[in-house]
Image 1 (cartoon, rainbow, N blue to C red):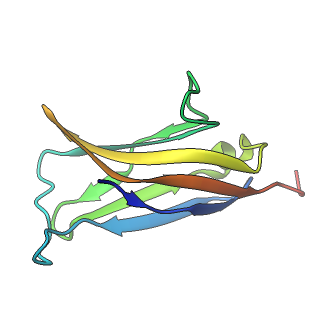
Image 2 (cartoon, rainbow, N blue to C red):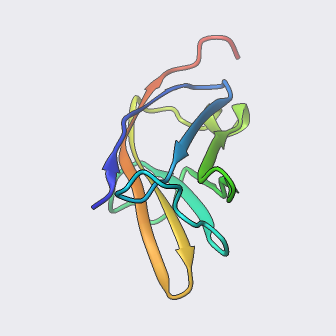
Length: 109
């Protein structure tokens, strides 16, 4: 089951978060050959994503780095969304993290 993480995002500002993926014994999970994808949607049934991005992966440290640009977060005009981060290495898909996105709306435009 995916971990749950609420993201607190300032609309119109760059947002970054890093996740380290480890095995149950604490060792770094081998991310060789995996790609990452993250999406933010208005709700779970939304046909299109507000943000669709490919986080970077550091295989040596097991770190997945998620970044939403200021332009991307500027598109967030509601105060709450849903999001998820998945890792894929065909045919395997791992939903690593999911949760809510709470947005502080942009004032300076």
